[in-house]
Amino acid sequence: MSTDSRLIIVSNRLPFRFTERDGHLQAIPSSGGLVSSIGSYLDRKPGGSGLTEGRPVWVGATELRTRRLAKTLSTDSSLATGPYEVRAVALPDATRDRHYNGFSNDTLWPLFHYFPSLVRYEQDWFEHYRAANSLFLQTLEKTVRPGDRVWIHDYHLMLLPAMLRQKFPSLAIAFFMHIPFPSYEVFRLLPDSWRKELLEGVLGADLAGFQTHDSAQYFLKSVQQLLGSDLDLRTVRDRSHSTVVDAFPVSIDPANSGTPSMTTRWWRRRTRSAGTRPIANSCFPWTGWTIPRACSSGCRASNSSSRTFRTCWAR
Image (cartoon, rainbow, N blue to C red; front, side, top):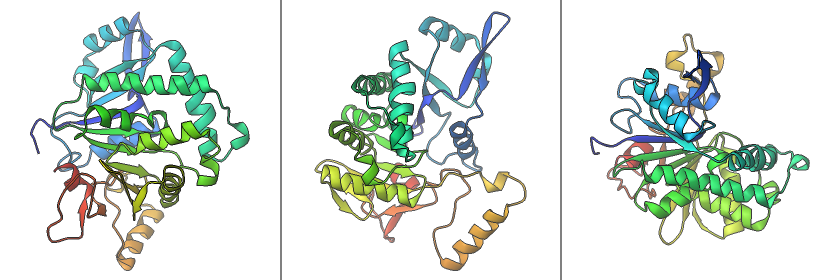
């Protein structure tokens, strides 16, 4: 792996919020679940994330105007020395509102949580959702370097992996969904063009991760039924690219949480007695779990029928 390799994290929002004090903006670290879980993962010792060298880059949207944001990024010392390099995506007000409050939270969120009666279907919202994903792509085009690994998060950015794949065919891309993915019978309630574009968007990644086995299987069934793609166990194949789909439950890091909980102790006993895959000491245990031998990253298994996600990304 190149010593210049970086992990680029992409989420709808940056890992901090801005507050104004004495006429100056200050960045306050966010306490949200996504930020906390990724932070715990990157805090693993020894060796950090195990995927990159150096400080990770975080790409996310902000409500600040471009000029004020640039000034804040250049004058706030906590950002200059913080755990992440920051790349901000400036979304126009209308796009930000229809992307986040509209399509993401009034269409996808209720549908994916099995509240179809609350879903609103607005073509204008979907157009702004696509536009927002394209603006994220524009920022990534200026950010990505050879050898980087891009980790895209959640339902706000389901179109981004495929957009990024078109621009960087050999780039290592992962996608993780932090909310449930619904059953095929529910997902197909979306208009045909939307659901196909969303599925094809996620399939731009080398690895698509979900919280539960059910969500991963529902996604695979939707891909098979709506796109007619070839499946090989957990791998979706097409002529130019393959995507591994699997479950990676998010949790706290038991190594850093004091006395293990009853659930943690039960899980450890279960994995030892059943001979199943051990839970890694990380919120996103991709470096400890295995994926099929014919992985989409093109790695070659030597004496084993499987390779870890870390090995595949470190090709």
